[in-house]
Image (tube, rainbow, N blue to C red; front, side, top):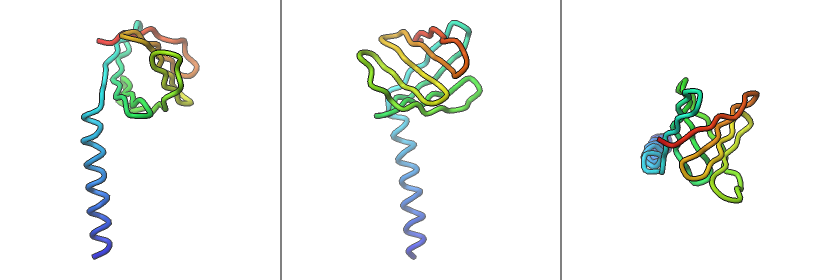
Length: 98
């Protein structure tokens, strides 16, 4: 009985998390090299879906103005409709919200 209750609780938690993601602000960005990014803005991170369908979670950083999210692999900065996307080892890309 106890295991069944724990299983049910974990399933409900997983479902609640999925619903929450659908209700968060999001944006799509088109970059100068043709890269397309889909970004869901969580309370303390940005969840970025890359062109290869990989999802990167970038923790929010303190920005003087605008937005700044960064992980060890990626960085997303921006203000208004303009953003800069940087993948480790590559030059920054200028991007614009669509």
